[in-house]
Length: 333
Image (cartoon, rainbow, N blue to C red; front, side):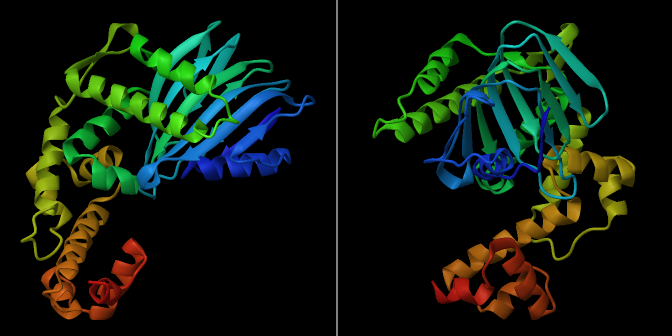
């Protein structure tokens, strides 16, 4: 059995590490399997703003175990997979310990997952693995997806455990275009990027237009109707208030949400992919960055304005978040 364990942060890195494990070099972002291992290709490409895409169209002569090592202590990203896997049986074990075994000759499904959770997938030998995956890092989600929509997406990813929805008809042609793309064409990467973004747009448009999603065994998931979600949105509004001078106590936030402190911390991390203080700290640092960009404030003024009494601590936190010191943002204004 080929075993591959990884922490997913980017599909380009994922494929680079897999190629090193198999001791097969990449050529222009494409891994071509030799006959002794199987046949087919694995390809990766970068999309705008840190999004990466993975195109799988291969078969192995040995069993394949993929173990995604979730990182609950780090901000979570999202992965969106369009799967067309031909196999006798697919085994999936998620971090709750429950195995899911699906018998099928051809699976055409969409799966949205959070990278914050561990998941193990086993493909029996000679399975035909055809899939297009997109990875959306936390930074992309934070800056490009509205907070209430992001909460719904993470909640849906949690509820989707053990369930995948069918690929709609309008997405199938996009997938065929990707799988049949000519790698020697000068427009190869442009075509892949275009179709991958169209797949994403179709999924999100469908997701936003539905108030209810039919799950497995006749169950339904009502988007945004869980009472906990409304309570958490009130906490987000508090922590995102630009007039907030310091982080509120957990006790005060728990009373606002009408939850125990343990439940509040757990549910907030589950839905938003980060801890309460981390969310608050990121928001105020983003506020600081925007203030510095105006050129109307000194670094000290900005630090004090967002609640840092120690300028050194402000500089360290800012650099950890954005990779540059506050004075560098001010200098480049």
